[in-house]
Amino acid sequence: MMRPTLKALATAGLLTGAIALGTAHAFTLEEFTFEDPAKTHEFRDLVGKLRCLVCQNESLAGSQASVAQDLRNEVYRMMREGKSRQEVIDFLVERYGDFVLYDPPIKPSTYVLWFGPFLFVGFGAFLLLRTLQRKKEEPEQELSETEQERLRQLLAKPGNQQD
Image (cartoon, rainbow, N blue to C red):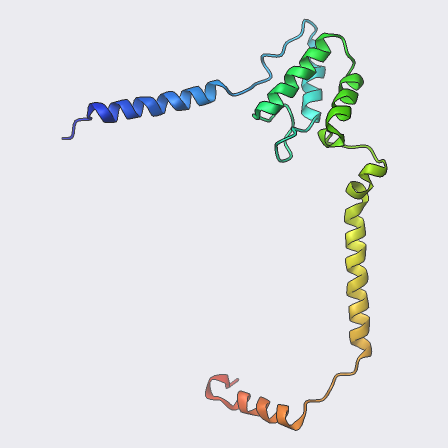
């Protein structure tokens, strides 16, 4: 039977410690508390509706990025100072743009975001219809004698027999 060596035990201990420390720094919303439970609920709802600036489609509430933790701290600080929900949102939009919102407002700077997909689909449908219309108008050309003979030769090969 093999006995674990001191080096193997040390390596296993270091790996276990690294994993434990990695999860110890995970961010949660539990650290953000208010005296009023309604204010806690409002805070959690707000960070759930704000987008993390570095993550792919993840809210501030769910993101583990350090930038998200900084933004949660900023929102928490502002709400503790008595700022309203709209004041917090206005501050974040002014500083980071409409990207911080999951549901950006419809305004000239976001028209492409809101209407771009419809324009692309409409343009694609237009091109498809135009191509089909042109194809319908063009008469099919007959094969030349050379092309017909080549086709007969290809079909006559042993591997191309159809039952």
